[in-house]
Length: 285
Image (cartoon, rainbow, N blue to C red; front, side, top):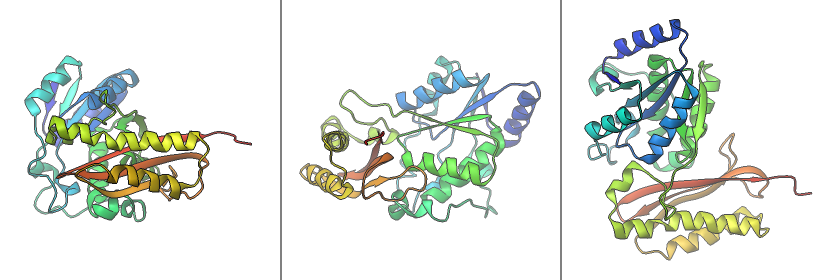
């Protein structure tokens, strides 16, 4: 496994690999790798001839009061895990070369970046779309793998790739969870064991919604209200949003049918957590 730090070196390497006819599979990360990341990397390894994993904590997607400075950075441990998985290349650029002092070009989706997460993190998806575009241009992958846990991000990236005619296939990997149901996240490092137990209310509320749907409920407002009551009973929680949206435009659904996703963002004490499940209702005639 080789570590590449220079943007130009990575671009030249990608060009050489493609000239050799190699299919590049790419997994972008911000490091602090957990089993969720590793599952995406295993998926990428099956899809390509060469696997590239990037590690870059992207300052452009953090707001002024967010946790950029304390976001976990564990490069040595991450590198060991990637070596164990036999990843071919780790792309590890620095902030100065990625965003030089005169940097001023950003990618933004006019509508999708303003709903759900975008309501509470106004610059977040501009930063995500920008860094993903830059990484795709540098790594030049044939396939890029992202996680379902970041649901809105996955929808936005697929839309951005279509709109900009980028020559890459976007693959979405399933959310990986602890036995308790808590979705794996790098920010789980902020939680102690007692908080992790309380945090399972997110997944339990999603399962409660799924049960309501299985029992015939189709009114989205009633489902969200029931989820909200369940979460509000847990100490230390504050809900940013609970949403049921379609997977194409991220528009709120009122009456459930077809495929949709239930997503939520909840503060647990000082830690903000997100989670979601996708649901498909087939022919109900």
